[in-house]
Image (cartoon, rainbow, N blue to C red; front, top):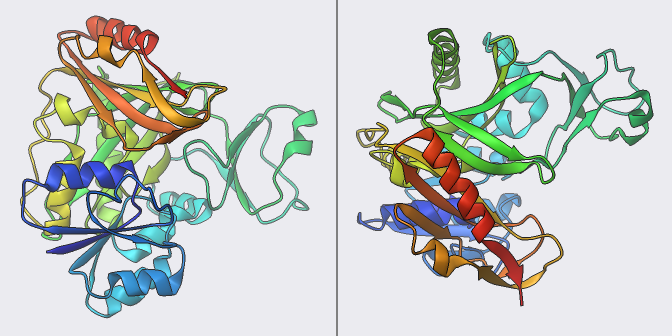
Length: 370
């Protein structure tokens, strides 16, 4: 099959790497000439937000998918009307890429999500009590487009763009569950992972699996995934980001209609990875076994503060000496502060050992520049 991917970043790169054992042709579209997929696919440099560019890119493909949600969904809908298979369908992409539509989707389908208010401009009165979270309607990504308003003084920092104002959850843990559905209606769910964020960068720092949850919490998550899969009416792979509050209640933070950072540890930690699963969804093949093999975790490699330019990975030789430790670089030649450059997966026999190894690896490696 001729498989087109909107976006040529690391998620597309790892999908293609995983699928190279099969017989398909991969085509990618990305605005950056040196995108991570440029040298492992039939690459087109172009804007995946431009209607005509997406239309021209997809018209001769058997299927088109995404590795970033900020794409031209209207062009994908037109391609679908012409008989091109789109995964996930354009309607669910359009719903998820707009925070306002996404929140309304949760409300309509009785999926628990923090209480919210929609504002269209800065003149509207905010009735949500402090503290609250402001999420821009469009464009947010990797912690961008999200801010916490804690005090009356913080009101001066409110963005004027259309936004969701959301009550602030008293978070105990941040969790993620990745679900998949193929065209035949078969579904599979990866075991829940715990996400530990870097408070400064607001990016995922560690990802840990398995997570030991009470029966009640697991039931809440199972109910959320069931309601979500029943509501979307689309094949695809979806990462549902969750908050567990300090009273034991589970809330949906947001959903990504694509491969996700919180599933990277599945490359070595599960019987099959999220990338294998996504390939099977695209092809409408039987979905893969997602069972846990052992304790697994992931550490993001991000550009260090104060460094920009040609990348250097300090400490990699020492990491390569460690057992059950796996490096995944994204093929990005230029680093800058906070930029995701790769990740390292670690396996262990217990959660305690896993955390020790992740912390050790984090102390060993720095992403700097020449």
